[in-house]
Image (cartoon, rainbow, N blue to C red):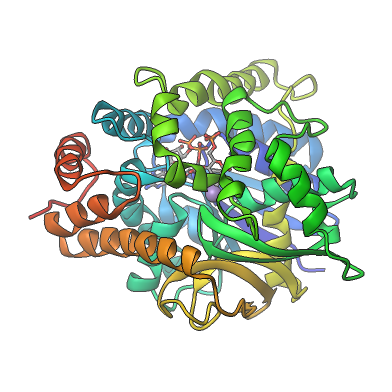
Length: 440
Ligand code: NAD
Ligand code: G6P
Ligand code: MN
């Protein structure tokens, strides 16, 4: 059986140890001969890498492990690039969240002005990764979950249309795990779903079991009461995420014919989100004090002790979709998965060039979209506005256009006026000097 070589781009990510543990847990399904970490921050990556080196030596000593900041070393002789970079790191996420809040607009990692700001940083970073992969391992596939995935996907469609990059998000997976729990099913894989939307902006339209029984009525009854806020075994959900899962019930009430993605909360209830935000302490602070501190602390402890035996780091089970995706390509499994792909008729009454999130059959030649047909006026209207925000952001990046970025921020449902949009934009330009192209 062929063993694969993996490059992890964003080796210093808080998610890297969980993904490595997940890969090591799945070696029977997806054998690996080599793992290489790549990051442009040597110091940050080294802390994670030293711990992962020990973890790999203890669990799978045959795997060759390398960590580097040199693209040639990282991207040569690889079959898959798993990409999760955060250009500007948490320091910039904090600014993305706090700057809009100063103007009374919500601050979020991937939605509204914060997401646009992050997009303007991510495009160049992800394109650079694609180019390294194509230069040093032209047959490799990139599995990308670097955010903001909607903007990054549109940018790769525009700038690298023939590249072998698959854009994927774990939010629908996290929600489907909750749906399965609500229905008393063993696994989310017992459900066959239909879904359409943009990334962090979509709806389930049909959910059935493998026998074809409609599961939507039972689910809707529960979602109307608790949203997606149900306890999940082995998962200690943070308070702010529980709020988001609960708020899904109000989002659901707007269109009870479908089940919503949790991220729609930011577009339908921006006033609620602002009222419930602390402008001096946002999600970025929570993550720095929580996940980042924990993961880096555990990694330092592993390196000091020279063993991962007592470590509290755990397998990121959510991330097993990454193995499903890699296996689909490697073994032509034809697994049905939600991916962010060019619409091209999958949603028949929507822009054919939009990057949409729809179910696909994934095999060795990549994804084949499953047609979702016509979508209702409500969602169509919302999606046309939002996809224009995403397209204008990418155009602004390509052309260096201040005007287009102002239009993008103005068009976001989260922003109430062009005046506010301009004030936010001017602050974001100042904060992002090091990362954005110069805008004229
Ligand atoms: P993090 O800041 O801990 O890690 C990101 C790493 O990327 C850092 O070590 C940083 O140095 C590195 N980096 C930044 N720019 C780079 C570049 N140009 N080249 C190489 N490396 C670079 O962030 P995190 O919280 O672990 O998240 C990582 C990414 O995964 C983010 O983009 C996040 O939004 C994304 N994410 C996506 C999903 C999804 O559903 N698609 C789920 C979870 C996380
Ligand atoms: C979900 C989304 C990701 C996003 C993450 C943020 O997993 O799908 O796209 O990056 O949530 O989580 P955090 O804990 O960093 O706020
Ligand atoms: Mn996501």
